[in-house]
Image (tube, rainbow over all chains, first blue to last red; front, side, top):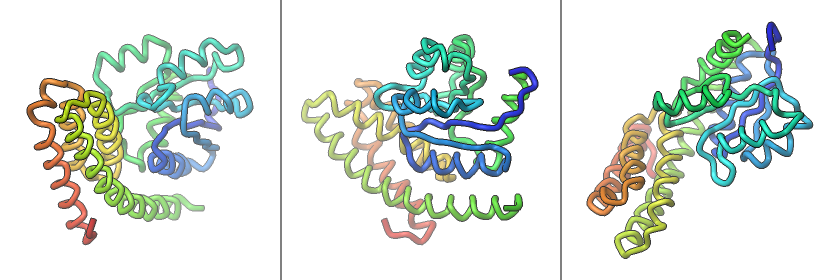
Length: 129
Length: 112
């Protein structure tokens, strides 16, 4: 990932309004190609085809939640290397520590300022590069 | 699209989604109240339904700037996660959420 420019993102969230906000908000950075989907299961289906540079995963989703989706990605040879940032409404310090120690690239707290989201994602990406 | 045009488009869409959010949340609050009553009648599983709905309302509300709605939903979510507190306060917390949703709608000139 070192020095790589962030070009494509998959955002996974079961809430359609938030998906639309994130899509529009990330589009403020015109070089970013943004895809969204509504569940961890769907993400695991399309990730091998999309191969985005980064996945943003909502934590609390019905069925396969964010951490479980992340764990499945880590079991999959083709998906293991795709970095993940968790998006959570419960950004307690111990939870953030747990996500980071599990290998996440970063954690974004909800609610976030849509106008600043693209900057926040790019900051996480650059900090890890 | 220029930066300014993209921001303007995002702001306009946020405003539309905020209206839809308040309408939907008013409906969901009615469903939460029904679930709270089912819980009072002994249906323990209703608490999970309430916790999940309150979580969703909390997350999206903050995104649209409805902090009071989001905070009321947060109190409800926490109570639903704690069965003992739920038994004592659930219906009054639903009332608080309902009041905040109506207040937010009124401040935007909406009738929910």
